[in-house]
Amino acid sequence: MQSRVQKEKNPLSRALMWLYAGVHKLDAKNPLTRSERIPSIATQRVFAIILLVCQTGITFTGSLVRVTGSGLGCDTWPQCHPGSFVPKAGAAPWIHQAIEFGNRLLTFVLIAAALVVFVALIRAGRRTLLLHMAFLQGIGIIVQAVIGGITVRLDLAWWMVAAHFLPSMILVFFAAVLVVRIGEPDDGQRVELMPRALIYLTHGSAFALAVVLTTGTLVTSAGPHAGDEAILPEHRLQIELLTIANLHAHSMYLYLGLTIGLLAGLFALNVDRKLKATAGWLIVAIVFQAVIGIIQFRLGVPTWTVPVHVIGSGVTALVTGLLWGQRQRLMGGNASHTGSVEADAQLVNNVDYARNS
Image 1 (spheres, rainbow, N blue to C red):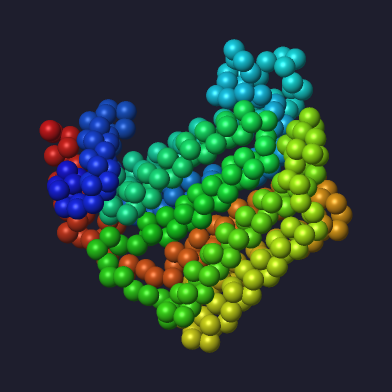
Image 2 (cartoon, rainbow, N blue to C red):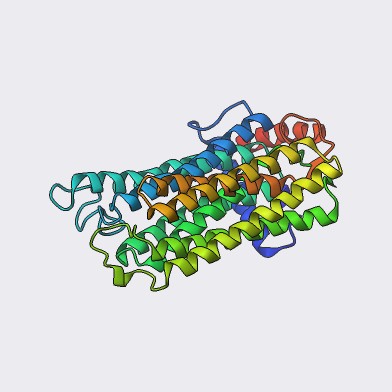
């Protein structure tokens, strides 16, 4: 790992590689984590999938906080209540405290999942891009926890709630990309699996997702579910709900149209079967989200629709990330840990060196 540090020309990347080399050395020497087994690419991918599921799942529990009015069940941060890191009898309804505190605890599950992926990639000596992506997942989770704390301290100001949701979708998107990238050989050749025009459509679909999610947070900010009963309507986003809902709907139509166009192009050119399947599932997810959104608007946003719509957003971001990651792929390696027989052999030597140094 240390030999790779000198090859990095970017100062920031070199500094991060020094950090990774230190983690690699500590992992090799630590009797609690030391293992003779180097995780295979398949195992690394399983760890990444677990992280992806956790990143998506916490958006669902966050929506439960909102619809149950539990956002201030713990009314400060990092403590739950002044002088206590855990719920306190009588400080707030117990159910609100339990839901908010439980959601906070899931942050540690996320951190653990990200750490497992990060250490597995370091132990396997994977390429620098993967190490950076896994590291940023962990940093993103910590930043999200801080943003959540600021949101509570600002009494669930609508703009902070929106700022808390959107980074979660970014983390889900890139966790999905990480799942794709981990399955590639490190020494393979970059191959574009679709023509340039369809790659542009893939980028357009991802951009349209960003617009949909942003306008969606504005709809929520103007809607009835503020996250706590004490938040008055005048403290919500002061914009006509119909106006912002129409903007959100039209951005969804754009998103759907771009993805349908992409799928049509994939079938017309008979490209990779996995790409066609992913694009097809993305269309299913978008249509499902559109149906839930219409139900929400027609029925006045019933409580049950909010968690469904939020987890649907997570799934949509997940599948969009998979599709975006699959547009091109490293191909040609055939080893079990790094995708290179030579690198696999060198990896074993590096692990032995780290343990003995």
